[in-house]
Length: 297
View 1 (cartoon, rainbow, N blue to C red):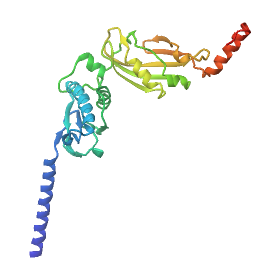
View 2 (cartoon, helix red, strand yellow):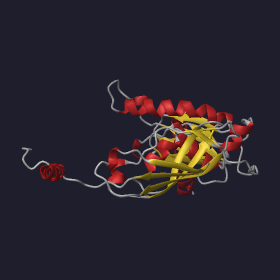
View 3 (tube, rainbow, N blue to C red):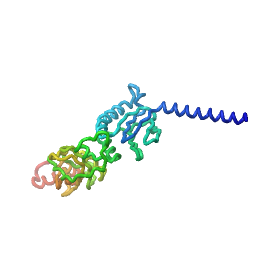
View 4 (cartoon, rainbow, N blue to C red):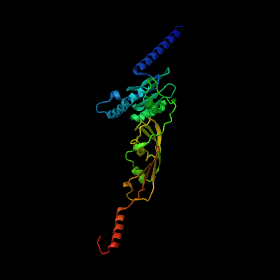
């Protein structure tokens, strides 16, 4: 009987220790209640950086982009919070999960009840974070811009799309053919997903196309201006072509631009020809010598 009492006492002591450890760990890490759509920005090293720490620059960029986008997310009904601890708890629908960033990296934790959380590691620009948030929560950016935010409720894809005519491009920045792609004779189409604010492009992302053509396509689309219209999202296609006879100075020649539709633009360049300057000079001298054989060149 005494032995049984000892075992019961040991079990009770062990249980008490477990409860104490759990309580201590709960106090050590913050608990975030994700009752609705929530974006958590985390930078585990933020509170321990030294004045000359190399991570200060990354933290500055991280904080700059987060500040510029967090207000917009809040107006859309998305809860935002910042965590600088090593780990934190996320409570969603009665379930609590401990999250510890891998390798102490910064990033974003997107969570909503009934959905698998999504992790985005690294510093992200405001436009990239808005794009990722839109896709995770099913937000329609065009409807948010058109109708304004709804307090306390995120606008989701349940809102029926509105059939609006595509806006007309009234102004473009410099149009060019990427020099490396031109030299490599790379051609093809690049599809760019565009979101406007009613006059200008606010988000542009290349979804399909050659890797050497995508950056130039996004760069050019960002300079477009449209006739006033209802803010919307749509895709545009940039056709990169090379036609005509190859020329030595093709890289310095202007490209031909044809706007075939509000969402279709063709960029046509003359294919380059690799020329040997010395051979060109020699041929020129021979030609001149035939005209004036007695002249010294």
